[in-house]
Image 1 (spheres, rainbow, N blue to C red):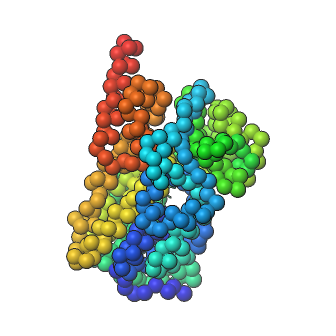
Image 2: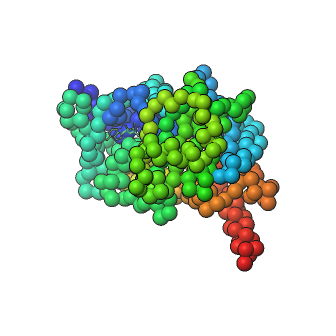
Image 3: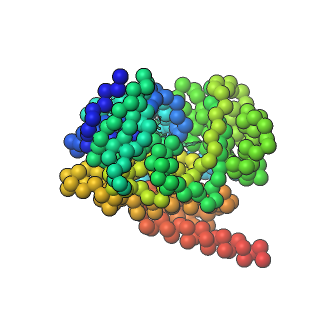
Length: 413
Ligand code: FAD
């Protein structure tokens, strides 16, 4: 039986990192929130590598002590390996900022997401697992609630002042309102699996994320060490390249591993302990983040190629910003689009900076070479890599990248 009330202040669709964040911060401000999640937690999810700027939202959620006590592996750096096998020096986060957020975690998402959801409950959020949202209800252009269905097939309505769509790539409202803007260039997919007993760095390098380029730069592998001696390893490449006319996902994964000796060497003596997973159709955004009575956050608002592990950060950050806009709007009695989207413009600019850095990598950008040429930008690059995306000064990096490209072009003429 569904135990949702008939009315509340805010309904949140989805209990991933975005949904847990928005609802916890609203509950902290005394707002009544009902969170509706179709699965029962713990449930599997990809997206295991956090980046340091998650620290500030996690701190606000009171999650830091829980993460410090957890088994999650500490992550201090990210490292790049070129298609010729050349390793860049690690980008240690603390080179840039000597404070608490110079370290983050590699998390198994089933465990992390459940911790976040239970933490939301501790802060007063009413959660309903096994409860699927079937539709968002509108009166004119204003969202007024949702229709839900419990595990037994029973349906009912929950009316709310604000509906938050945190349904991840299901993107309920983005699909219903036809708001999807596909990325003009990033059309990628991914195939991944998990190993036990694979290579691990030592000391503070144990938890480094490594990005390894495949031969001819046709794609790249992520290599993410997790606790319990597990490693998450996956290849990302152009959709057509990975999925058209190449046989099973297992076959493609094995072939790509052959084409990336540095990745192959890392799992050579290890045991593959799960099936192969695949996902397609990366990178899109919504035309708008909010309307009258509704807000989109996390992957439901937009998704970026996972190259720099920015997804959970963006889910947390948009959840935080939306929560503050909603709480303020409820106090003022204003849940119009203008109020609920007061964070949208700055957020989208930050997301675009990360997108540009992703595009540069696919365009052949070499971190080591760039930092050698522009040592003054080393800190800015680290800022981008830790997810400190929301400051204008970073735009200078892209001007320097363009000048380096122009130089290279002149030399080849
Ligand atoms: P989700 O985590 O997807 O949560 C959405 C929730 O909504 C789910 O629990 C779902 O069950 C629920 N839901 C959906 N529809 C309904 C409905 N109708 N009713 C009720 N509930 C519903 N990010 C990183 O930070 N680091 C990484 O290393 C990383 N690697 C990635 C690798 C790949 C291949 C991919 C595809 C993504 C990766 N990401 C990574 C991105 C990351 O997975 C997402 O950005 C992140 O999970 C977004 O969180 P969210 O809360 O918006 O959505």
